[in-house]
Length: 161
Image 1: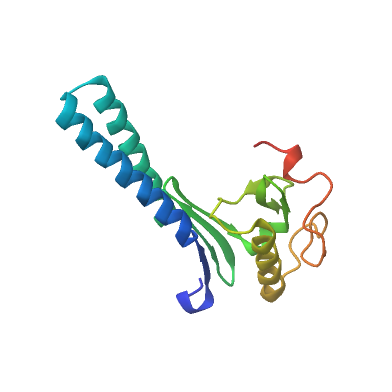
Image 2: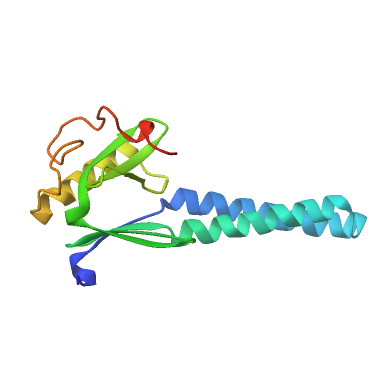
C-alpha cells in the first residue's frame, strides 16, 4: 500500500469549482427572488431544482480527483472510488472531445473523469507516471506508455461511452 508521499493527486481545476459555485449561488438567489415575488410558484420550484442540481455539481467538482500512487490508479468521484492496480493498465490514450481513457489488460477501456484540465496534458502525465512505476503493464500493446501519440487505433471511441 502506498502512502500520501508516494501519491500524485490531480484534482478538479479551480475554475471549474468556481463556475459550479457561481451557478449554485445564482440559482439559490433566483429561488429567493421567485419566492419573495411569487411565493410557492412553479418557477420557484424549478429554480430550487436547479439550485439543488448545482449543489451536486459543486460537491462533484470538490470530490472528483485522480490519484496516481506507486502501485495503483485511483479514480474518486461522488459516485465512489475505483482502484486499478498499475499492473492491470496496458496504456493511456486521449481524443479531442472524448477525454482521457485507460486501457486495461483485459482490453476494456476506463474513461477518466473530466477535471477541467487539458486532456493531452493529463494523458502525458499518466504516461510519465506509468514509466516511473517501472512496470510494463499486462499485454504490452495498445496505447503503451512510450508512444508519442496520444491516440491509438481502436481507442475508447470503439468502446462504450
